[in-house]
Image (cartoon, rainbow, N blue to C red; front, top):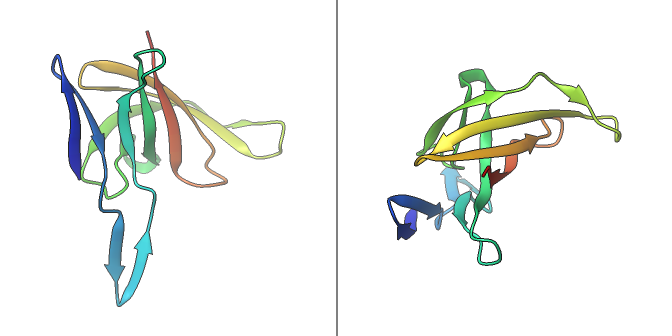
Length: 111
């Protein structure tokens, strides 16, 4: 894990080593990140859902952030969707989570 941006006590992160070795098999992911967008200055990224513990995490689980998940809804493609809200480094985030597909959540800063 590497911290790449630090500005006004708002810290962004990008996971740089996203491969784990489990019983001789390697698993690789795109990781997780929160960073500032150049086009609008807001923060956004990808984190992972841990609904059992009401939190979102980095891919490797080293960052754990308390979160609030909505109830599950059915979306027009026939699957489930949940909304999630959390605060990281004093910044409020919002995202949509599709538990039928995977644990990743695309999040954006709420202003």
